[in-house]
Image (cartoon, rainbow, N blue to C red; front, side, top):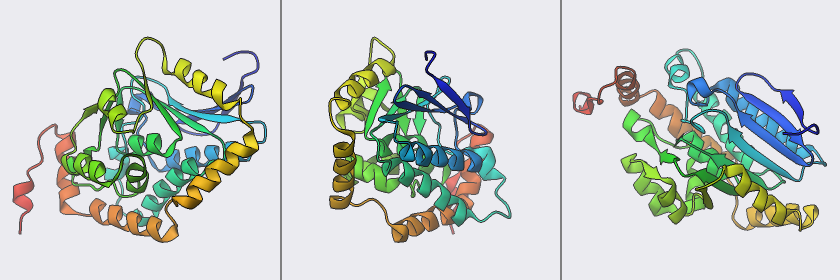
Length: 268
């Protein structure tokens, strides 16, 4: 950052900075793997909505501090969910994803380390995605007895239904190279930081008119619609049901106990 950078603290776990005509939204919970909890969901959504309304911003870069971009949901937060409305919490996640996807400015995700679940959702919701060569991806929800429901529309839109199904059913890890092959990632930063690749994209973007780019995004989203409120409520209900299940209780317990879940004891 240079002297034109304007830092803005926006609550727990996220920071907004401006540099010239660029907005940088930075996840800053490195000690938690930048995992998403309720507060972080709301703050990141608010920052995307804010930058969307800022006429001086030409592009938004989503990045993260520390080793990992985003390891998905904060399981400690999920574990302490007794008494909370899980469907409303799931809708909050869905609204975050939609805020990213509907941002009128070009958006670029810079990802590194572990990119799991909701982290892949954020990546897929952006217009461009650059990965560090060490990035590892996984929809690990299924191995916790969960369903990656609210992020699924953005994953399907990005890589197609069958690839989405295969990765979500197995929960297997895949590399930045494989993520590029399936279209989740646009480029890999092999010899330089991902921001340098992002700046190459921004250089090309600034050769175009901002109003034309806004119209292009609106046009594509009209022709290939993003989730409406009916879809958001449906996916939120799927996730909420999974979160309330015995499988999820066993999956999260096994995670914290560092063992494999015993799914067999849950059979009727």
